[in-house]
Image (tube, rainbow, N blue to C red; front, top):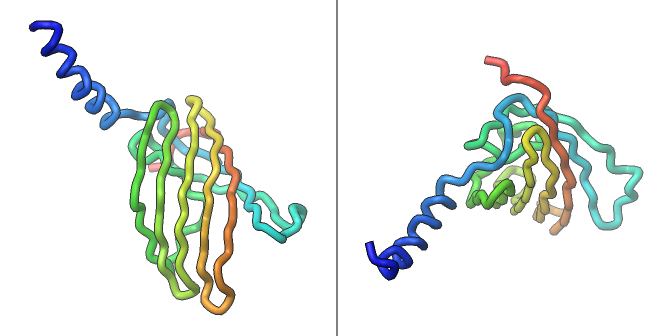
Amino acid sequence: MTMKKYLLLLPMFSLAAVAYAEPNLQDGLWEITSKMEMPGMPAAAMQSTKMTQCMTKTNAVPTTQPKDKNNDCKMTSTNVVGNTVTWAMQCHGQQGDSDSSGKVTYSGNSFSGVTKVSMNIKGQGRMEMTQNMSGKRIGDCKK
């Protein structure tokens, strides 16, 4: 193969590597700690919360809220670049609609990240929130 042909094929191999990228995370049960920040809300009023989630390299978006059957949420995009996972989500519910985007960076058995949420709550208007989070692997997923 000539050098010219090789250079033409190189971008295709690079794109294939991105399409199958996986973050450096160990599959298993993860404990996720999150703390919400809202403009105008005293920091002391916002308590941190903990949840557990079974996470895998192919399901690497942390969930920090309990599932709510009154909300219809759909992931609109996910992307993995190196050890960083980004996503966007839209939710529609009885209380209003929200758009969120997030970013976490994995380091094997831990991660840190942030989610930005913009909510339009019926009767209250638009609210913006930032959720800082960290996670650590605590064991295997229960079957």
